[in-house]
Image 1 (cartoon, helix red, strand yellow):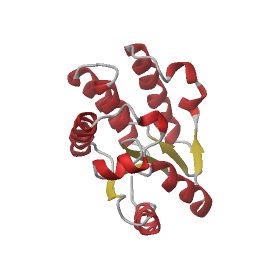
Image 2 (cartoon, rainbow, N blue to C red):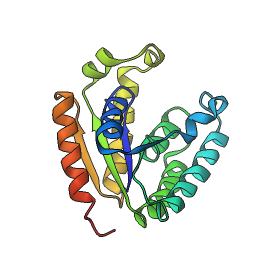
Image 3 (cartoon, rainbow, N blue to C red):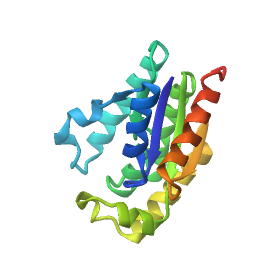
Image 4 (cartoon, helix red, strand yellow):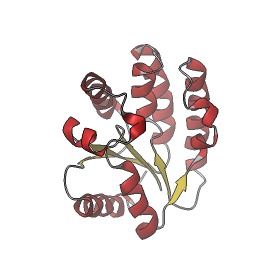
Length: 182
């Protein structure tokens, strides 16, 4: 099974992923982080790279025989491409649909983590000081837009709850989905 953990910065993705790796033996995919020179570029060529990577991953999902978790892969590419890389919604959504279609043909599910702006600010790391309430609102709107459009099974989780409760809810859903006929 491929699990994509999505959500805004500081919504609890890394905390959840750490628990999943240690307790459910998921492997963590770090591929995009291997290209640090691409992380801060604001051109659409980064999106072209991401589109190619995501399609390759969706192909791989059909043949992988172990569980892999991804820290942002799909919904984030859409939302951050529109907000930070200045792609049009139409262009970003077209890319989203290509990837979503490929992933929906594989053993892939999505957990979308969200929290209110105040919780995000309280958790933020120094690198995220640039995100304003307006960015939060816009990103949330973009994430919710693709949440409604995806063909993938998705679980939405409010991470303002205790981290152990969040983990238990997600684990139960993952176990339920492991028997899902993709």
